[in-house]
Length: 312
Image 1 (cartoon, helix red, strand yellow):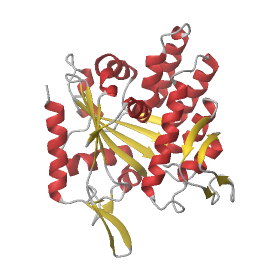
Image 2 (spheres, helix red, strand yellow):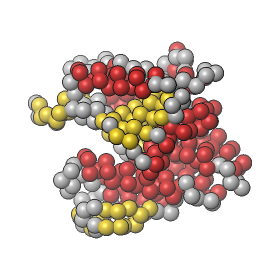
Image 3 (cartoon, one colour):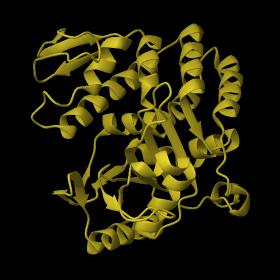
Image 4 (tube, helix red, strand yellow):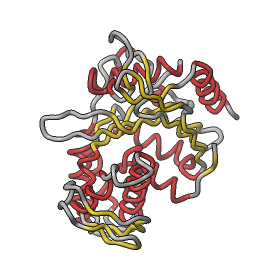
């Protein structure tokens, strides 16, 4: 575990849902317009879980409690709902104004409720949507997860264009395999990306010796750059474009009132973030690449989350 700087906090705000960041932004001369546009977008992305009606959702309580939010980054494409290649449990403690981000390797070998045998944890979303993804994570860590935010990574293309493109520092040179334009060279150093180029940048994996680690790094770079520009936009037109993209690519069971509650009661947590990556061992079994997480590690993560939530 290690503490991340403020730039990481901004990246997390986008993953949680850039809507929250825009809510904070709505303090300028066009705040009234933005507020009502956000309200409409929040209504559009609102998608309660099927069992929400049977839950005592914590953000409805008068006193703000610690909460767990499952963040799902889904690589969804036309005619393919995709799998949740990014899975992070965000634990927010309003008393300490801190946030714990617990990431789960997408190839973690688990037993998904209602399925026979073992599967990769990122298949839970493909098998049973957000409900099964939440249920699976609740089971392996033995914790309660009240909320989720799903972001379709395909929307990243439109989001980059909505903020006018981004600049990133590319640490290796490679030729595109066809995610953007086959043969296009992403040169080492500072490069400018429009939406289509950004998709090619974040999708590449095979030409990076770091594999998924390198791809995750590039995803973080682009997301940080998008949010950094979004935080400084002063154009209502640009804001509306961003909201349109969000409306088409985000879903969550956080209502508009829940989002406002997050801003008022949990806002400081974005500046005090601790990261933890669930530990596992890569293993090739029966022709499949897995990440094997031992029972002791699942228990360790449970203790970590529970103790963080109860900290005063």
